[in-house]
Amino acid sequence: MDKEQAVRKAQKLMAVALDGRGNGHEAERALAQAEALIRKFGLEQAEIASTTAATDFDWADAFHAYGPPKNPAKSCPKWFQFIGTGVAYFTDTIARLHYDAALGYGIGFYGDRADTLFAQWLAGYLKASVWEALNVAHRQHPEWSRSEMEDFRKAMASRLSSRMRDLRRERDAEFAAASNSQGTGSALVIVTDKLEKRDAEFGSPKYRSARVTVRDPTAAHKGALAGDQIGFSRPISEAPVCADKN
Image 1 (cartoon, helix red, strand yellow):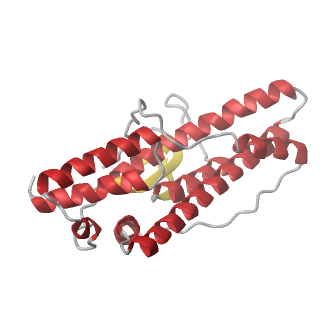
Image 2 (image 1 turned 45 degrees about the horizontal axis):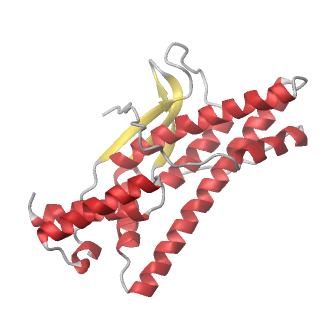
């Protein structure tokens, strides 16, 4: 590894450490690795913050099928699409409805490889969390019809998506504040540069806004409350399985 490669690697590690999307262990590990590179190659803060070095992105796409492998989905429900767009905002990826001949309908995520793998894992984790929460709610309300259960899923998914968008905005605001106070915007520069190059590679994301319509306010309220109970950090022991189409 030469010095230029070390700078690019350190920039990526600092972005992981600062972006707040993973758990604390991941952030600490990334920061320690970045500091080791800085010491080994004698890197300066100005080099880490430079926009000219933040160009090495590993573009990829990852697909999360909605249905299980032995029962491919023939459609992708709205509530899972809500989750997909929220995950895309949260992970700096682009989400698009996708069909795979073997796996059926699902959502493809496009962006830097590390981001797409995180998005792929997070979409599956949140999908399972919705079904688990619904099972608990249905045991408490066995009288619920399919319509009421769908209201629960849509409301929970909408709330999860809203929370992920809010966290993304909070992250960007923190980066901007750090840039103003420290005179350097290394993390913000890296993210902005990545998003611009991502859109040049895959095209700008185009999402249509959809109003969440429900028939049963009680089921929807319980779904929204369930959405507030879910975290978004990947356990450090989890290793997402890549379903790359490349």
